[in-house]
Length: 92
Ligand code: SF4
Ligand code: SF4
Image (cartoon, rainbow, N blue to C red):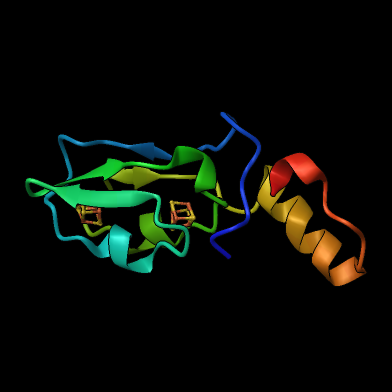
């Protein structure tokens, strides 16, 4: 999964660093290593790796993360997997 890439600059992922309490849950649940915990705050270190699965936002207890799951490229890639078509190359 780490090799899949989103189209650059279009993910809906947003992080409110001020609200983050540094629990590290987002880093734990993200399948694409988008976050890195540093000095008790999380940072987005690879924005375009986000596939908008929503796991980080769902598991953040202080609602410091927002993302609109299931739209855009991630949805397209999943559809191509199920339908057996070659994915759009700029997504991966
Ligand atoms: S899950 Fe929320 S509070 Fe915890 S590190 Fe991530 S953004 Fe911060
Ligand atoms: S939405 Fe999914 S892929 Fe994107 S940062 Fe959150 S956990 Fe990682």
